[in-house]
Structure formats: C-alpha cells, structure tokens
Amino acid sequence: MTKKRVLFLCTHNSARSQMAEGLLRAAGGDRFEAFSAGTEATHVRPQAIQAMREIGVDISGQESKTLERYLHEPFDAVITVCDDANEACPVFFGAKERLHWSFPDPSKALGSPEERLALYRGVRDAIRARIEADLFMTLAPAT
Image 1: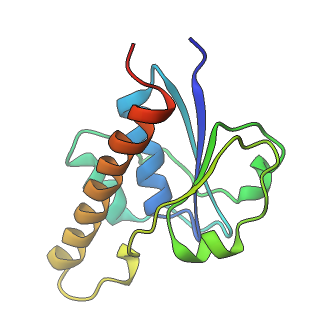
Image 2 (image 1 turned 60 degrees about the vertical axis):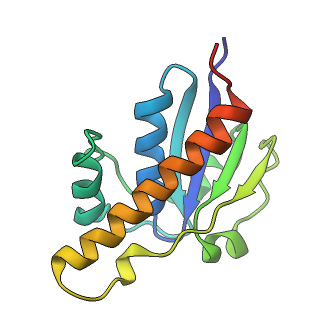
C-alpha cells in the first residue's frame, strides 16, 4: 500500500501544524507521510512540545519550515490549520485535495503557564480528533 502524503500548513509552523504533523506521524505512520510548514518559519513552541510529550509523541526534533520547499511536491492532501494560512496559502498544483481546519492559536493564550498549556492541550486533542475522523476514515481507511 502506498502511503498518503499530507502537508499541514499554519502561519509560523510553531504549534498547530507541528502538533498535526507529529500526531499523524505517530498514529498513522504505516499509512501516512506527514509534513508541516508555515508561511513564515520561526521555532517549535515549548508548550506544543510539552503537550505532545504528555501523550507520548515527541516533536522536539521537528523544525519550523517555510512552505516554499513543498510547493512542487505531490500531496494527497494539503491542510491549513489556521485561518491566516488558509487565506495566504498558494495553490499547490501537486495536491489532490486541499482542506481547511480552523483551530485557535494557542500561542495567543493568556493567563498562567498552566492555563496557557491547557489551550495547547485542547488544540492538540481537537487536531487528533479531526485527523481520526477526516484522514483515517477517508484518505486511508484501515486495512
């Protein structure tokens, strides 16, 4: 079986798209190749790394990348995970499908460190649910 190639895009490639890449790689590694990028590159946020570590997924080795490196690659799906990236996203001619999943930006969370981390956890869990519902069931059903 050929693995499905999925690219997650966000503005800074620092949290949502990084978590999505890590979740898909961990849970669907036998069926998917996961990638992430941003309209700008920054760094992977420590809170995203911590939220993922809590569920046994290590994204500490992932790096923030710009989407230009992927513009001419083939993908089964290109998924924007924030509204800004959805609006700024160029056309990916090699993508079979382009989807938009809107998640709140956890880096804009206010409050104590624990309150901010709670938002990262919530976004992580929402992304995981969407991957399970939309990708596992439609792009690459279990064999």
